[in-house]
Image (cartoon, rainbow, N blue to C red; front, side, top):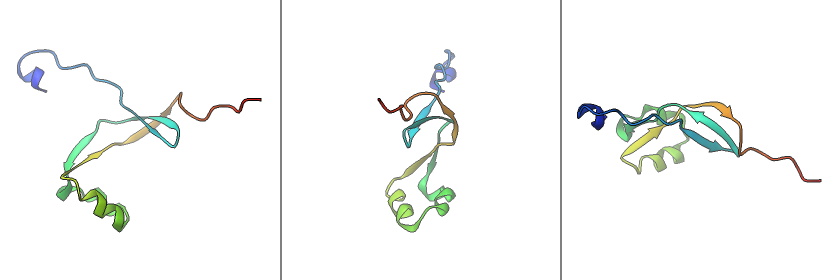
Length: 77
């Protein structure tokens, strides 16, 4: 954003990925929100909510389609 505000080109957009349970997934644009405004925390268990509230901000990622690679490998003979 700073580049665009200064008249330069914005940085190139990278494809974000996350590894979960040994599989790679594409994720949507991360959203950073204040913990006090994080209504999404209501879906979590009480201990998880307490842990999350230790931080001032939360990053929310929307996990999308599965990508090839880094998953379980075939067993060697």
